[in-house]
Length: 341
Image 1 (cartoon, rainbow, N blue to C red):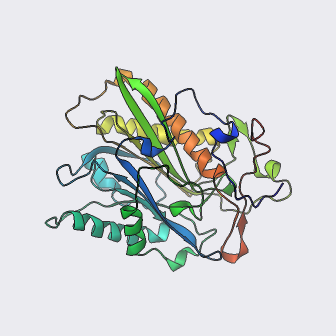
Image 2 (cartoon, helix red, strand yellow; image 1 turned 45 degrees about the horizontal axis):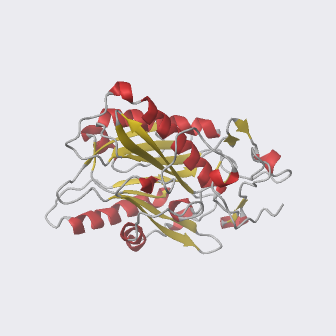
């Protein structure tokens, strides 16, 4: 089988269906009304494989400067800029930007520029920037991300189906022994009598053994004799959006479930893996929060959408050779449960 795959497919296209809840029309975080996604990709075909991904809630306006939100750190080995203020106030006040570890601080400065442009009188801003370390395939010390790259991702964000795999902040990432990247998924359900959408977007870059619907699929089995060389740890950033009326405490419960879902795909949660989830709601503030007793289906929607987003991040990625000639192969489809139909 040709491992240099270019025509890639999402999990459902391969017959890998997670859970029983229906997806949204795009099966993406952008199924949550008003949530946009933009990418800027840097790929020179040699030493640079990196970029920026921006999650932009349109509900953040001059009239509404914050959305209920929460952060959960499964393992705090990372640089999640702006997280402590979210913890303290339970509010997201900016788009969420994802990038490479050593570029997180330049990205935060660029995001401040974006926020200042939207509020000429403001004197304090809380930019939220997450990261994973793409230094295995990209020359991370060059810190190629500039303000222009961040602003392009923010300004180009749209409500269509986001690109997945080797794009934006996922251009140089690896996970579970294979090339990974950006993935997304969504679920639709009824909660307390009202329709609700839950969407997830992930930046996958963590260790472990790929597990698909409960079946471990080590690299040495899927690609005999060509196990990928990769770092044991690294990280995962997960962004969960919903239109369910929830408070910050309840959103923290969703964020925890998002991290739990990593275990379904075989995450090792290693020492060096910074695993974070950010959950926010776009629901109008006038709505009454969903009772805790009605949250079980929302928890299921988060777990299922994150699991599928993680699989999409791998299945949509392509084999990449990067800095130092290191190569990380894409997941081959013919050994997947269902035969990669």
